[in-house]
Image (cartoon, rainbow, N blue to C red; front, side):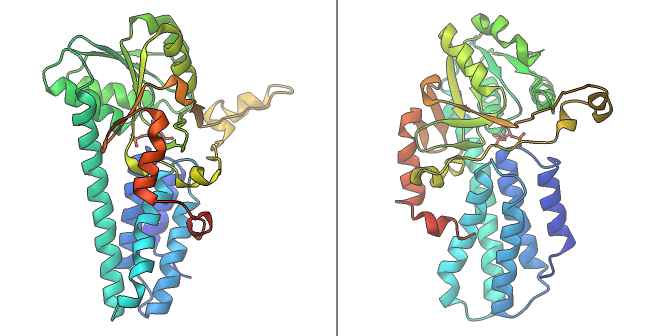
Length: 320
Ligand code: RI2
């Protein structure tokens, strides 16, 4: 079926990480469904239904790990499918997708702001924080605490291979927060100076394990050894319903060219490159997860999942 170029561009931008960050990816997917509805080349209910499903499929196959992406698509499609018998005209269908996508985007933005408010309560005046990669949720906590007048300092890892830590350092620095940019491998060297580690999440499993940017698990391990607390800031749509039914969260492996120049690699004999984008931090190394619904210990992840999705029928989830 024909899919508008604007929609395909969003899918491509997610794939190439022009649009990145689990929350932003989710909002971009919702936006893409909205645009797809607005620019639909099909105007009969049956065609439109199949077309929307195809757009959903395209979006779902852009990046595999961030659960926020399928959860955003599901939020819209599930409601759409449930409402199908009640649509009188094609226009009703189109309007429904547009409104539901807008609702998701609004809900997502509000969640990030709320996480900031809730998480900032756990930050004390004088705290030295460490963050990894570039998480809007973690930044929301840090900036809210800072704007409340708490004197804080942040260590930001550069986050090889894509250096998203530079974005974090710039954002926080521009807001007036004192930032120290460090190499990823300097984390243990500085850990004893850190009061709290605060990171985001791409996905959270039913047992409270957190999937986040590669390197997070070694930071959490180092924090655990130094008895430094680890906070994860994540919206409820980052929790993976599939994991309630025993599915594993796939870990994206990206191109070797992000790690080393292909020409340089070609000069090396018997060398291959692996480039996993994420790793898994077990719940034992996480103190709390800050969600927009409140703060939970990682072991309570199942409660958030049940509130969001009820008991999961895996065949239902895999439909898209
Ligand atoms: P927010 C990012 O993934 C990072 O791993 C970050 O911690 C996580 O998404 C959550 O980001 P990537 O897209 O949703 O850079 O909190 O691979 O912004």
